[in-house]
Amino acid sequence: MDFTLTANQQAVAYLVSAVLFIFALKGLTHPATARRGNFLGMIGMALAIAATLLGAEVTSYGLIALAVLLGAPIGVFVAMRIKMTAMPQLVAALHSFVGMAAVLVAIGTFLNRRAAGTLDAVLMGEISAGIVIGAITFTGSVIAFAKLQGIMSGAPIKFPGQHALNAAIAVATLLLAVHFAMTGSLWSLILMTLLAFVLGGTLIIPIGGADMPVIISMLNSYSGWAAAATGFTLHNNLLIIVGALVGFSGAILSYIMCRAMNRSIINVVFGGFGTGEGGESSAGAQAAEKGVKSASVEDAVYWMEDAGKVIVIPGYGMAVAQAQHALKELMELLEARGVEVKFAIHPVAGRMPGHMNVLLAEADIPYEHVLEMDEINPEFASTDVALVVGANDVVNPAAKTDKSSPIYGMPILEAGKARQVYFLKRSMRPGYSGVDNLLFYQENTSLVFGDAKDTIEGMVNVLKGGGH
View 1: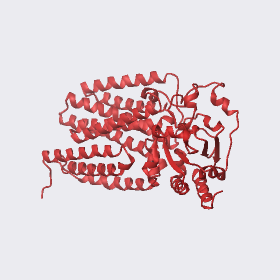
View 2 (view 1 turned 135 degrees about the vertical axis):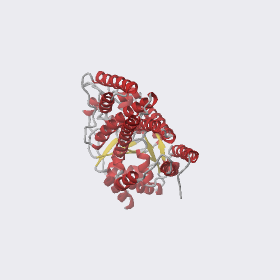
View 3 (view 1 turned 30 degrees about the vertical axis):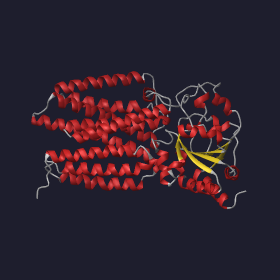
View 4 (view 1 turned 180 degrees about the horizontal axis):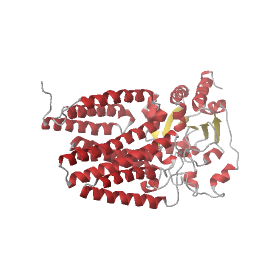
């Protein structure tokens, strides 16, 4: 029995898949519908793969089956073993795969079509675009992975003439791409590919750690455009549509993230937090000369159990400590005492967009308790306790008051307006941006030192023991 789809049948299947992908993106815009959106995306992808495999263009399944047998167990193993703290690194790694796939498909298409004598100017332009975008995506994602994983320093890596070098590489890459598209020169192809790989690395190494959420979403956009270019090369309409969806959504998300940080995308690409050179008279240096108050678990519980409202501000430290489940138990115990508990999410908290939302959802913390920055900021003035769990830069008043600070201008969660602020921290080290947090030195702020999960579990035990 022949199961091969006709061109029209495949087109219909692709159309249904595209619609499912659009609904999937719509679902992913809110935590309450994210699970459904993810499910719709999975159905759409399964349909797209099936329609492609049953298309007339697929004449042999041997290599495809081999690739699935080799790749599927690796994917399952990684998905089952990956920790939420490492999810940003995984996303960066997956982006690199998309970029390299675009490069390899483009080169393979060129070699096959050259041997068949069917190259044309349009196809050569598509191949050039796929290689350049894919190569930049690959090495850029590898550098992002290395920074997030700690293989490379998260600090910006800069040197004199860096911008001029990047501009020269970009111009040379573009000229080689045009020459390749016009002549089909193999040497132009090789040099263009190598320079694009280099450009991807040199563009990302000067990015500071605090800008990583933007870089992750930007690389997501790049991977989408790489996929779209591959779709043009392979004449696959669905790949073009999906690539465009990913490319545009990643670009829009990058814009939203930059707006949340009060920074332009150009500013992110050509520099990073922690690169400013504030002098000794900066507010951070002055505040460092003052004392910092520390508190015990019992002190924090004393304030929280008698509070009317507690706002919890999670950050990457919560992800590292895997403290979200302990926070859920703390929330339930406080609510049993009549305390209103809410969670405040900054757009760039964690290492990737939505990182904190996913962690809180994993602990089954109700969506209605989780509020974004614009919604929650007006409530801090009427809040008794702000509990900062592993966050840092997103609550730093230096962003509003210290013009010498590299994070100046970034909107923050205004935790300092609460009656009492408790930071759960392992040490006095600054946040990922390397900027000293002025909130540590406010009169209403105390630091509870220790692992966030252990500290919160200690609070839970005190509350279960009857409190004060």
